[in-house]
Image (cartoon, rainbow, N blue to C red; front, side, top):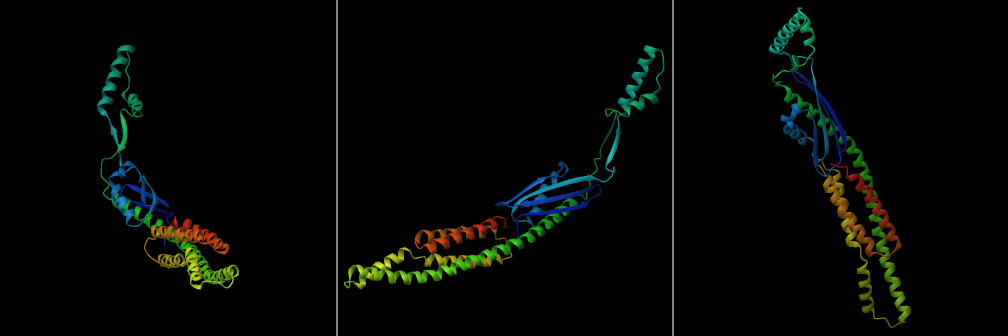
Length: 293
């Protein structure tokens, strides 16, 4: 069993970049992958999503990819020589005409080198052929680390669910025993009360018919049997290797429906109390199931 809450991190390197991936996940009805990455990685987005889908099946996955340049090997200096030459010539001509003096080109160049209009540093247009492989490798490692943390938390959830399943099974067993005793006692008290009211003139066939009708109205054996079936199915799901979150969620809804029916059909205070306790246990199970993958 896996939780849907997890965290994973990985770092890989390509020819020109260091790629860092952080991946955190929380519970969600479906698989919802949210990517945050530089525009250089837009071309790999579909492959990144596919890599994650192969490892994680459910939850809201937030993925942060960061690129760090390895030195300045992928940068180049671009000098706009024609603009610089034109400016130097124009300045020399203007200074000589206005001030009858010469302006040294070196002094002009020293000022111009700090101006981005004449000198700029930009990314080389060369392709990093190892970038895709490094990115997908980092994403896979982060997803596997996230999956490992989900498995660790899932083991804790599995134990809690099993403890609550056993507690609910005990309540069903106790309730089944009580119902058998209650029906026998109810039958005896019903027959005695009618005898007291009617004296010795009691139609046994009519008595049994009326008693059967009353008992059938409050009969919860069918609901108890279905609860037993649901609990057995829950036990099998807890031992399953596949993702079981949605099946468990549906199963809990069915259990809650059966318990509500038991409460509505029963009048003894003992059964009402048992229903309250069972609903409390089912709610604890439901809260845990919401985070199961």
